[in-house]
Figure (cartoon, rainbow, N blue to C red):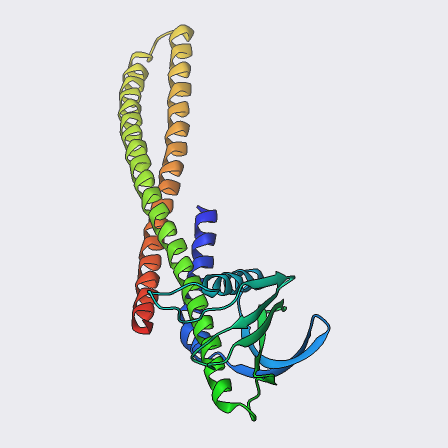
Length: 277
């Protein structure tokens, strides 16, 4: 029960954080002008920061480039690159044609670096032997920044969807646990009823023996002692089963609260995702 509750809290906090990510991170992701040494060459370009694991960013960026390299999207090649090459987070394209930026072929160099808080993606584009610059190539700069922001938005949305799926798994698990606890509580209650009936029978027998023992010898006194010991054992058993019942009912209540919390949180996040799309 404690592990389930801990997982619930963790997923809830993630959903609350990522629920704000599309507006706070993806849509408002800041693209900065930067200069970076890549493969021994100092290059000027654009930089964007992610609050995501660098391996996730690097894998998605690599897949993005591979997917767009010389392939078509929806029947029309929106971003046809030449074949991408990779090395330690560095991804380059010798000649890529990005019509939304320039009609001329582009030499693209990009790199993903991990940071303490996430990852940084840098890329540099040579425009007819002229580097991408906010002052010298403002139109191309804005268009390139828009593509980076779109990539960031897609990446954050994918991460949010994963968190929603995790939350759904928790809800399913919690529902099943609640059912199990209900079945267990029912069984314990049935056993308690049976033990209570046995206790009542023993008490009645003990009362009858007490009257019968008046004036009887030590043999009957010994029989009375055995009856008392049996009754004490039944009382201890009944007390232990009552403890188990209370624990089972508590777990059932916690599981039901988990379902309510996670269902509410999922609906809120799904609603935000719907407004973003």
